[in-house]
Length: 394
Image (cartoon, rainbow, N blue to C red; front, side):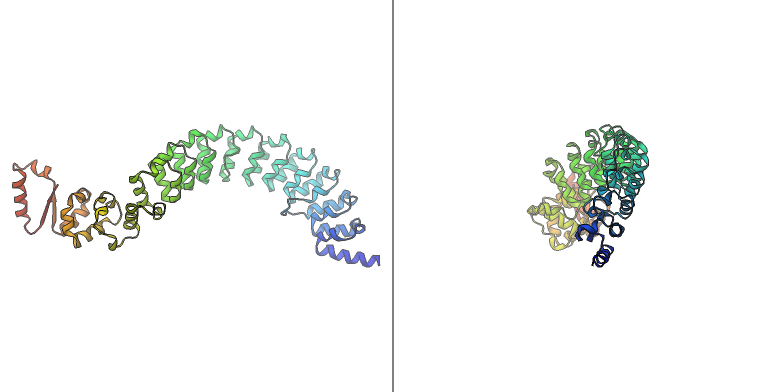
């Protein structure tokens, strides 16, 4: 009967080492059964008898078959104190599960070969190394190669080491654990924000006020604007660049810019979704639609439209807007031409468009500077010269 039971339980642990938890205690002290259990799942060592947790063969097999799991526990944790001080066992343990270093003896936490093997696989194991090895540059560099956050566990001296911190930011990890001195290092901060704009958060106040650094940060991530200095959050170039990438970053700009109509319209022209922030502002809605959802049906020559030609002229569709007005609303254009004129005369394309519609525009000062006539005489002369055309002066 005993033999039958042993064979039954042996099959159970061969299929799943964790089944060792549920078999009778007498079999948890059976070396053959436990050996098969830890071969299948190293962590099942936790269910072995205390006597077998002292057995080197059993424990060595367990750590060789250990693996990371959601509980963050490892086979070495359940080995005896004597075996936690066995270099062969601990080396195999950290090779499989780096954080097993936590359960190594104090002596082996100070063993460079053991610690190097641990951090090589997972830099976070540096947390469990001795103070001496947390101050070992070779060890720390190896740790941050695969886990930049391991810098947290480096010595104060190495947190101020340029090579170490530069490797950390190259790995796209923040400056959070770097020394204050290196948080003010232009080269390091530049690499950091180029890799992740959010890392501007940990830069020095001086570099948060550096325009080039902040531009690099927001080019990587617009929301980095929130970490820029108060002065740069009020800088039109900086904020406009941020909202070009993501309008919602406007939230982090200064109140002054949020309430600056000229600036908001520049943002609308450069960003298709900015109007979402101002759904009840008719001017912003008009500019947004003319820029991004252009349709001639949107052109209603009312007071709102005619009084804001200076903004409308900035939209990419102003040529088509002007052509539509000249074609279908010429009378209104003539009556209000002074609102259009300065946005036309500085653009050859717009001047030629007007000429195609038989409209000629002249600068009074330029004419009178070389003509010895008064304006009325000049006007009559030009009207005669451009008969059947519309003559406009400004």
